[in-house]
Length: 225
Image (cartoon, rainbow, N blue to C red; front, side):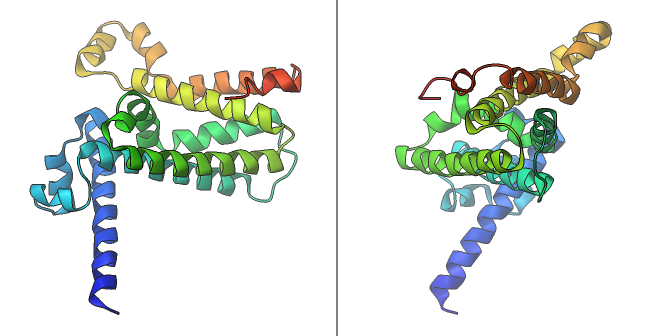
C-alpha cells in the first residue's frame, strides 16, 4: 500500500475519531450546545490546532456528525423492519419513533442544522450534506413504503412530522441548568417537558392514523415538500 493510500486511511480514521469524540462529549455534557473544539480534540487525543486538517471549524464537524446520523437512522429503520411486510400505520410510527429516539445526538443536531450549521459552512459542504441526507431520507422512505400499508406521500409526511417533533421535543426535554432547577421547584412543569419518547410516540401515531383517513393527494402535502 502506497504512502498516499495510508495517508488517506489515516485521515479517514482520524475524522471518525473526531466524530466519535464529539458525540461522546455531547452525550456526557447534555447536548451539542456544550460541545467545544477543545473538549473534542482532548477526547480524541489530538492537538487542538490539528483539527483544521480534517474540518474547517466546529460547524463543519457537527454537520458531518448530522450527516452520519441520517445514515444511522436509515440503517436502524431497515434493521427494524427487516423482511416484515404489511406493517400497520401504528407500527410504522413505532419504527420511526424508536429508531430516532435511539439517536439522541442526531435528534439534538436536527435543530442546530436548521438554525445555523448549514449556513456556517461553505456552499459545497452544504451541498454534500443535502445530497447525502436526502439520499438517506429517500431510502428510509422507500423502506417503509415497501414494508407497510402507507403510500409514499403519507410516509414522507410522517417522516417530516417525526423529524420536526423529535428536534423540538429533544430541546425541551433537555433543559438548560436554569430550567432544570425550575422544574425541580415545580415538578408538574418538568413532567410535561421531560416526557420525550412517549409524547413523541403519541403524536406520531396519531398523525399516522390521521394520514390514512384523508385523500392520498392531500396526505402527500404540497409538491415541493
